[in-house]
Length: 408
Image (cartoon, rainbow, N blue to C red; front, top):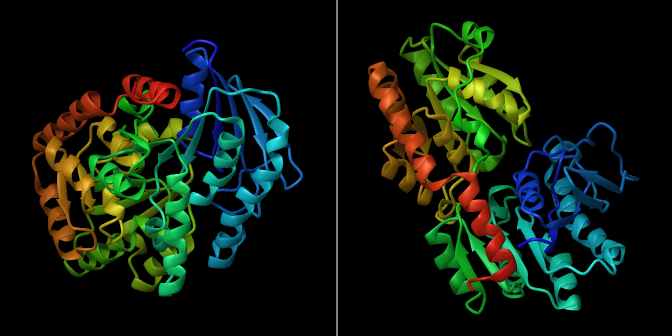
C-alpha cells in the first residue's frame, strides 16, 4: 500500500469531532499520501470554531494530512433553513475548489458520506474527470436520514430527494455499508457498484478504564446513565425526559441522567426538561474532547443510546455503540434493527424498540436493580464483542484495501 495517494472528500473534518480524521491518520501512518477536501469547522454549534471564519484558513496540515478547505454557509442557529443552506453550500463551493487539486494524481477517492449526501457531488466530478475509483462510505443513508433532521412531508420533494440521492449513489464505483442490512439496501439502489460491509470502529483509547476521582465524587450515590455524543432529533433524547417524569412520580431520585455533548437539539431538550420540571434528574456537561470521554464512561453505571422511530435509520449501527462496547459498561438502548441486534447478540445490556418509552422505563429500573456483578458481566460481554468486531486495526486495514483495490 506504500506510496498510494488518496483524496478524501468530507464536509466535516478536524477540528470537528468525526472519525474520518482518525481514518486519514491511519492511512497516513500506513504510508499513504492523504489529501482532504472539506468545509470550514462549525458543527454542531453552527458557529465558526476558534481561529476560523468564512475566509479561512483554507489550507492546513494536520497529522501529516494536507487539508484543502472550501467555503460553506455555517449552520448558525441550526434552523431548518440554515441547515438546508449548509447542506447545499459545501458541495457547490467544493466543486469550485477542485482546480486546487490539479496535478496531484490520486489512486482513489473516498467520500466519507455523512449528511448531506450532496457532498458526493464534488467527489464524483473529480473521480470521473481523472478516471480514478470512487468509494462512498455510507454513514447516513439518504434521503431517509434527511427526514430525521428536516420534516419533509411533500411527496414531490421526497421523490426528488430520493431521485437525487440514488443517482449519486449509482455514480460511485464502490460502496461501504456498516451492516449487512444496509448493504442489502445499497444493492437495490446501486446494483452495479462493488460493495463491502465494514462496521464503524472506535479509537483504541475508548477501550480502557479511566478513573477520575473528582468526576466520580461529583456523581456518587446515584445510578448514573450517560449519553455521550451529538444531540440531534435522530438521537431521540426526549425519551429520557419521559423517563424522568415517571421517576419523579415514583419518587426515584436515585437515578440520574448525564448528557455529554452538544448539537442542534440541545436548547429544545433543555426547554423540554425545564417545562417538565425534571431538571434535578439531569446534568449537562457540554462538549468534551474525545480523549476525556473514557472517564465519563468509566464513572457511569449504564450508557444510553436511542434512535428515532424509522426502519431506515435502523439499518445502521451508530458509532457510539462501538465506543460504548469498548468502554465495558452495560448499555440501555431504544433502537430498531441492526443496533438492537448487536446489543442482544453481545449480551451487552437491555434493548427496547425505538420510541417505546414504557419499555425503556421498565428496562431502566431493571438495570438499576441488578446486582453490580451482573452489570459488570454485561460490561465484560460488551468489551469482548468490541474486541471481536469493532477494533480499529483490522477494520482500518479492510477499509484501506477496499478503497484502493475493491474486492480484489
